[in-house]
Structures are given as C-alpha cells and as structure tokens.
Length: 199
Image 1: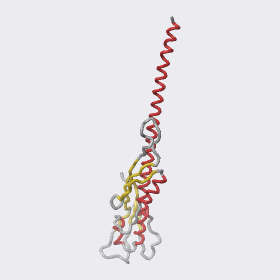
Image 2: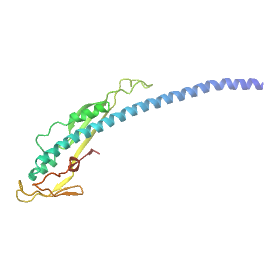
Image 3: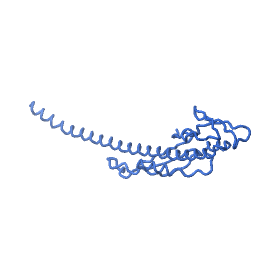
Image 4: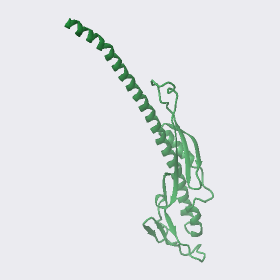
C-alpha cells in the first residue's frame, strides 16, 4: 500500500515537472526575444545620436571657418554665431557616414532651425528570429536632434570697426584679446561652439 502511494506520487509529479520546465523555457525565450529587440533599439538610438552629432559638428566646423575668414570684420561675427551665414554647405552627409559606421542608414536628416539637425535612422539588421512572430524582418528606428550653441560673446563698439581694433572675445571662461596684426592664435571650433544632443 505504501509503495503504491509513493509510485503514484512519483507518476503525478513528472507531468508537473515537465510543465514547469516547459514554462521556464518559454519564459527564457521570451526574455531573449525582448533582449534582442532592446539591443536592436539601443543600436538604432546610438546610430541616431552619432549621426545627429556628426552633422552638427560638420556645420560647426564650417561656421568656425567662416568666423576665422571674417575675424577682421566683427560686424559679421554675431550672424555667424547665430548660424545665419550664407554659404554653409550640406552637413547631413557626415551624419550618413556615422550612421553607416553604426550599422544603420539615415531615413531623414533636416536642419532644426539655424543651429541644429534632426535625424531619423533605421538599423540595417532586423531583430531576427524569435518566438515573437514578425520580428524576422523588423528593423528598429530612432531619432535624435543635435544643436550648436555659440560659446562666445563680445561687445561691438558703437563706431564701425572693420579693419580697426577688434573687440575682446569671451568664450566660456576664457577671454581672447585679438590683435588684427597677429591672428595666429585663435579659438578652436570647439571653443567657439558647443555641440550637444537636444534634451
């Protein structure tokens, strides 16, 4: 009688064990699928951030070059610092390069005002096979916006100064006393402008 009860208990426990193990396996596969999707989304966001920053940095470098070219005419400085400068070339090509380096492609890249770029990217690789149907060909998308902010301020004298003495330039905590006769030491692009992702 005792043996029969023990044998019956053992027989009943086995299907329960199989059910629990099967449930754990399904749960593990589900977590794996979520992890795959999360990693794919993170990759897309990284690519979008890099692309937006790269486009903005290219525009910043162009603005810095314009400022250097026009450093002798401080009446043009403010428009350059505000991004209102004619002759800026396209910068989204740089964003496309950075997106490609992060295994993604740019779907759209547009100026955001005068001093920013909004970028949307899509990953080249899909999420992949998982227990969640429809993920085999699903690619993640992400967007990011990078902005350029002038770091420098100055006070323009009331009289015209083109060709004359240059105003003192304050960039962050550093001050630049520019000598029109010796312009060898000028602020670098990253000192003139800050580039960061928009909040």
